[in-house]
Length: 456
Length: 148
Ligand code: HEM
Ligand code: HEM
Ligand SMILES: [Fe+2]
Image 1: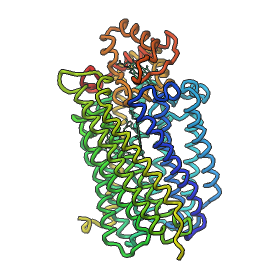
Image 2: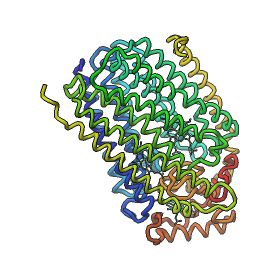
Image 3: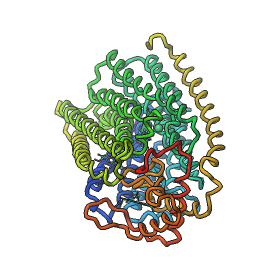
Image 4: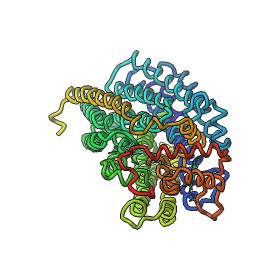
């Protein structure tokens, strides 16, 4: 570790991992309720489980991004973080806000929660992924502002690199597009239209910049390839992201009340969206092949390559499956969407966080050469368990989606939603099994942290 | 392939392409915002419809259901529940909704459950009006069938 302020990344990483365990646990509970409707009902209805699951996901990614930023920004700018104290205070504020919100979901009926949290003054709640009470949303804005300030000031006083510029652009975009979460028009269609400005322009534009920057940073560190070369790749990746991802928002405007021209614009632009993810794969593997150094932390490079590949499969391939308007007519809002949602979020944003943690955590714990061989072996096992688990879960959901479409949407002998779901119960059990594998994989990963260094 | 592309070329595609895409996106956003009122029949958006939307959000119905294909996949699509359960007849649908909301949760062992929301008749009417309004939005022929 070159700069002592990098240390603030540590609590962010640890807490992100704890939240991930919680997220997956709630995923498993949902998987059970999917087939045994009485499980946990009426104690925790499905919508509450789901809210906890997806909100933990978003919050853990934000924690991960912040940890990653605070780790890499001092090294990139070659100066200490502007205010480590602010970073720590922000950590605790965000932690308390996050935990309180989750407890609120679990212990207060949602309709009552809306009343308690001033939702009648400025209604923003009750929309997918943006269920947070107003105080939490305001809290997120403050946390993100503090994060922007700290990062921005550090960049201003230090060296500027392509990585810092791309990261900063992504962060500003993240902050900006979250503001649409506060705009809830009475017209449902208008509401849906702008809802995607937060959701799509996060995952398929601004977050992709952040992901690209983190990936580039880790690749520089573990391959020793010179910066010029890395920079060119990074620009190329984010150029493709911008060109395809912004107008690609149109793939959500096919069938929700927006004009017809989105059928064309959305299909064509988003058909290009897999390209930046493909470039990330080429990037990771080319840099790995051309590496100048043999870093002892082999797992960091494994995660880096892994995230590129899994993001390409989840976002690129599974996204492409349903992104053309005539196909989306039949797949819209089915388990196929859930299949894609899982593998894309996992491959891109969970795995990039594993990548930076795998690289940075050993250094933060005083092991500049990475963890010992034994710990890396356990980590590698967990890597495969989680990847196979998520891939299996995705395939199961895809199968479920196809059956659902054939049952409800194709041909003349249609059956209703509930009947169709009952016929898919077996597949949902398989999904649950793979989900369990992901969870055990994560526990295995955790255990690798506790393997003692061999005496040298 | 990347040999022929220089760093500054890549940088220019990023800024140039990004800004170009953003401009088109903003222009189309303005146009869409102009068109949505007509496509969604905003003139029919009565106070009851607006109240229904608020109830929809306050009770987090979207945490189990999809509405026009967006939301959760645990329970039926509700954009066309007006046609499916109300036969496109407002009085029939409103009566159905009152009955439906009142009997929840339905005690069939291990069937997926919808909670009891304890809404007043008036509130259920608001929800019905909201769902009726939603069912008439021009969503480019979606959903493909009555089963949603
Ligand atoms: C890492 C990047 C990505 C993430 C995290 C992601 C995540 C998601 C999620 C969670 C949804 C469901 C939203 C909802 O609840 O309604 C979704 C929908 C969708 N995604 Fe992605 N996505 C990514 C990239 C892509 C790409 C590259 C494409 C196209 C090639 C794509 C195409 C779609 C389409 C067409 C839908 C709408 C599905 C429907 O109609 O139900 N996504 N995405
Ligand atoms: C890191 C791993 C995971 C990530 C990133 C993740 C992400 C997500 C996302 C983005 C959604 C919303 C999907 C959408 O709207 O399309 C979701 C819903 C869900 N997830 Fe996960 N999830 C993970 C692990 C799991 C696991 C292990 C299980 C269970 C085996 C699970 C079960 C579910 C269920 C049942 C839903 C609700 C689907 C519905 O709306 O009907 N998740 N998850
Ligand atoms: Fe999208």
